[in-house]
Amino acid sequence: MDLKIESRDNITTAVYGSREMRASAPTECIPQHKTAPEIAYQMVKDETYAQTQPRLNLATFVTTYMDEYATRLMNEAINVNYIDETEYPRIAVMSGRCINILANLWHSPEKADWKAGALGIGSSEACMLGGVAAWLRWRHRRKAAGKPFDKPNLVMSSAYQVVWEKFCQLWQIELRTVPLSLDHPTLDPKQALAMCDENTICIVPIAGVTWTGLNDDVEALDHELDAFNAKTGYDIPIHVDAASGGFILPFLNPDVKWDFRLKWVYSISTSGHKYGLVYPGLGWVVWKDKKYLPEEMAFSVNYLGANITQVGLNFSRPAAQVLGQYYNFIRLGFEGYKEIQQNSMDIAQYCHDQIDHMPCFQNYARKLANPLFIWYMKPDYNKTARWTLYDLQARLQQSGWMVPAYTLPKSMDDIIVMRIVIRQGMSRDMADMLIGDIRNAVAEFEKLQYPTPSRIAYEKQEKQLGRVFTH
Image 1 (spheres, rainbow, N blue to C red):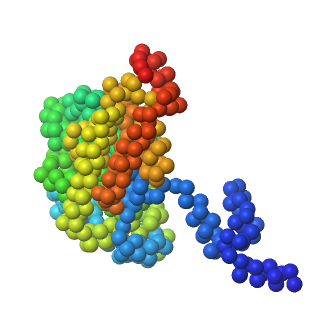
Image 2: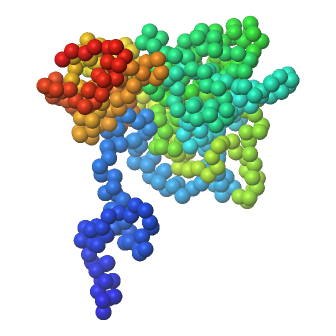
Image 3: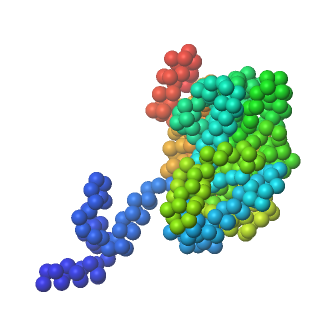
């Protein structure tokens, strides 16, 4: 009798009338008994409510909005594993088409029907593949010349994304970084070349620096490198980390030479899930020619029903993102991408101007290079302020916004900045709401009679360096 009643309770009891909703969610051990799907769904869904809503997350570069058809298409392919090319051959074809489209967008000189490239789980894997290829090519040259190959190094600015630190640690490559400053906010080609020697596997300029939103001058670097290689007899190439800029520059600044039009640019990586406008889980890397992709980077297996060869650090990977990228190329075309990226740039410019008009703030760069920017407190204002940008970050989170505050890289790590990343899904109306929330927060901070805890900690650290503040 009790069992019948219990069974009936499971059927008729409302979700929030269930026993599961009176208990804590499992944290250590798998539950002993089953849970009804609608209850399990609601428990997991409820766990996410305290988070920032994705479209209000202006800290991330990752796509948080796709249209209904793209979302449907990707959901319908959520159970497809890209690596099973025997079972899903059309996915591999679409991936190859995407690589071709990107290669031609970046002015590839390669004449082959299928360009040399690979997909990754994100731009981090794409960077890794570009770096590994440069390292292996360098090893081949050193071996052929009968020279040691145990001390490789890589040169880039100190504003690198963490994947490059991971790459250098995992492959035991020395990471040599060019320091930045307010006077030199991007990679200085001459300083970069001063760090190069016969063991340099490549130089990595960045199109769309994560820290600042600026672009390294790849054309100037290529010009200087050409003379350097001719003088030294070295063969140091360039890999462009274009995680963001790879999908911005071709549409908004097509005349800027940063890609395969330049002599020493051998490979480019980008993120399909950033300004490629695809939900998370997609990166691309393209080589100027197949000869720059070492053969040992391609691995073959025959246990999936046929002999399959792939280039990548990961094996199994989602196919849905490939469909999403190919859909975007078809749906948007060049004009559609240009319109979306231009809208993002215009809204970023609007926010940039509004921030610049506030008496307490100063933008890091006077001109936008990408739809993102950073700013900091004006030095004179900072001397008497009772709050920090960390307080502003916390206050904006109360309204649902995620606008990160952080310190700049080494040699500039005494400067606290904030960053806004504008992506598809951010409207001018939303920008007005954000700017309004920033102004309101600043007005409240300026009424403070005592410093905030973050301000006290900041001043303590700065006084140790000899800086004086007055309130």
